Amino acid sequence: EVQLLESGGGLVQPGGSLRLSCAASGFTFSNYALSWVRQAPGKGLEWVSAIIGSGGSTYYADSVKGRFTISRDDSKNLLYLQMNSLRVDDTAIYYCAKQTGTTVKYSLHYWGQGTLVTVSS
Amino acid sequence: QSVLTQPPSASGTPGQRVTISCSGSSSNIGSNYVYWYQHLPGTAPKLLIYNNNQRPSGVPDRFSGSKSGTSTSLAISGLRSEDEADYYCATWDDSLSVWVFGGGTKLTVL
Image (cartoon, rainbow over the protein chains, first blue to last red):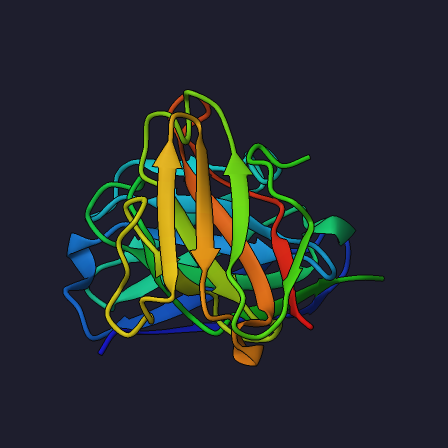
């Protein structure tokens, strides 16, 4: 059974940093692309970033490009999102999602329960 | 403003059939698979439809998806109270190299 468990969320001041983690199990981690998707309060789902299977190519939404960095540790089955220069409008629940292949353009098939990031002074 | 356009709301009575539309462009819906997600606040989004019209195991056949050109739709037949949720279409955009989501449609079962 595929399981994704996000952690690392919390309260941070504007301009601060936070690193989210997503622990995965139930599949061969290195074979699959992974994404982060967020939902701000009262808003819809917004894709944030993706990384291909076995690392390498990464992709970002314009809203986070240059501030967020996605990475993965295939030896530990962990996905990360390093978030720097956080802004109030980054406040959201952040979900990690497993895709159906090594490339990023196919199905966000399985999702974690999410971790809440609150950016406020 | 979302790249994919969905109606903000839809409604129906139990047993009815409801359709939710989603429109995009040639660089996203027109050239890639479309996916539909059901989302209840505070829970993990659930994949309802993948590859335009395929249902993952466990998703009732009351849910169906279709795609034509740069538009897609989700149909829910035999509406049930537990179908009340937010529904999102999504796909990859080849021009932007990003995933794009519709703004979401809140389905109310009257």
